[in-house]
Length: 120
Image (cartoon, rainbow, N blue to C red; front, top):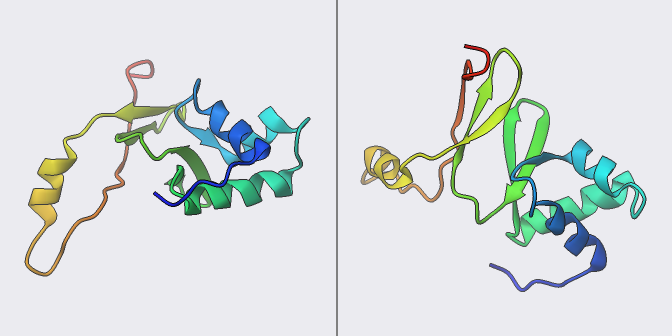
């Protein structure tokens, strides 16, 4: 991970992830709107991703969600209610299945869709 240059605004954004594992940019803007404007939120999100503190998750085309880089799970999105759930998957097994002489897997981002238990 890169050297972390702290700022009160970045720290405020990171602190949001203590209670929620996945947040959209819009949700973050809403939660911190009294402390910073939308452009500042987006600039800090970009910097936090660049620094390796957050990772950007593209569950739906055109919409980004964010979570701490230390979270190692995949995501399930319900086709009916749009709820997003964390799913634990053995990434080592997937890396072994995909890796070949020509491919070396560094990270995995799976987005699984279907119907959740509540909608089933």
